[in-house]
Image (tube, rainbow, N blue to C red; front, top):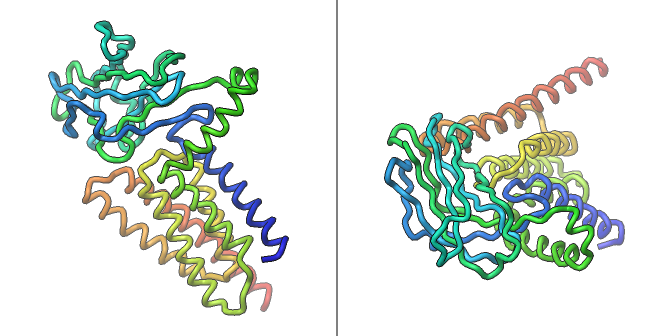
Amino acid sequence: MNKITQIKIFLLLCFSVVLAVFLYNETYITSLISYHGADSYISYTDNPLTHGVIIRGNITAGYNNLGIISFHINTFNRLNNNTLVFRLKEQGNIDWFVVNSYVTDRFVSGESYPFGFPPITDSKGKTYEFELYSENGRPDNSIGILPGYGGPASHYVFTRSELISDNQLGIQFIFEKIRNLFSDIHFLIFLTIFIIPGWYLFVSKDTKKNSHLQTVGVFVGLYSGLVYIFIPATIRSETIFIIAVAIAGMCVRARIPAASLFLGSLFYLLLIPLTIFVGNFRAANNAAVIVFFTLVSAVILSALKVRLYHKEI
């Protein structure tokens, strides 16, 4: 491996990590996150939070500045209009430190919602109890909490000013942030959305076997789209634009015909009824966005091909 290739790989990894950090929306750039899993629940239901039903649990803070506990919300694919209450207190205390109410029409199904409160500066090592319940929820008008990925997640919030003013704290935070992100399997999967197309476009050597390039390009594009559709983490919408640009670039490099993109959009289109059938409406929505951008890319490539054809004749 020559030095130019090594430099390309280094720059690709740095650029991909920076993009992934800014587009990964599970936590803020100046926050650390810990996932606590299903074991942190004392009482749990995946059904709607109706009146009298309470989700209870506890988490032990891994750092100071505990300021958010987040949950992945299930709206049951409808607009709910009632009130959800989140409460928090340190274990052993009688009084609740946090009691906040939220109107449920603000929640997006499948996404992580941060229940915030003033950061607890000395939270590290302490155990906190939480409750979620609805004051007037009904089976047909209430949200729920999704099981699986993340469970409750605790966020430790720092301000940019304190990280900049305290050099020691700032350096410790950077190292913890790196360790924090790279211990998150979903962040690593998300990172491959940028690394794999980037490798194909800028690092891998060209070859005369154009059919090989086409095959790899198609599978890389499909892979990137599938990660965007099915990853349970919350990511910024700008990601889809980057995927679309990467797919267009791969098509140009490998001379993939527009027909392949139309077939790719058909593949994603078929996923929509399947994801709706299994109740994953968030994935169906993401698939619809992929279909739109794939079709736009196909139309642009078709127009370019027609223009080149007219120039040749």
